[in-house]
Length: 71
Image: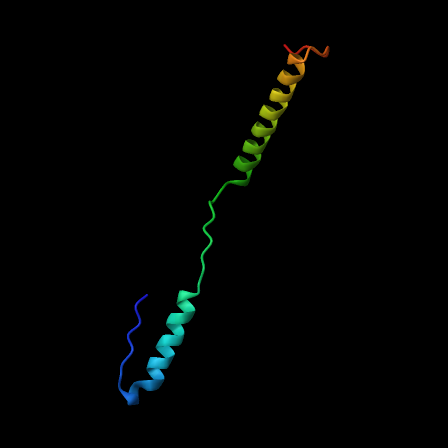
């Protein structure tokens, strides 16, 4: 934002108002957030959980433990 301030004394109130507005505008912080479909987020979470379980199962099988065999 660009704020113009005039040096004339008759313009004092408008200059002060402009500077206050510019200061408020400068202090605005935006936090961007990715728009995500709730169903897609849930499916992604489930896929990650399935992959974690598969890795745990593979690690368990690698240790030589006897358990259920998956087809």
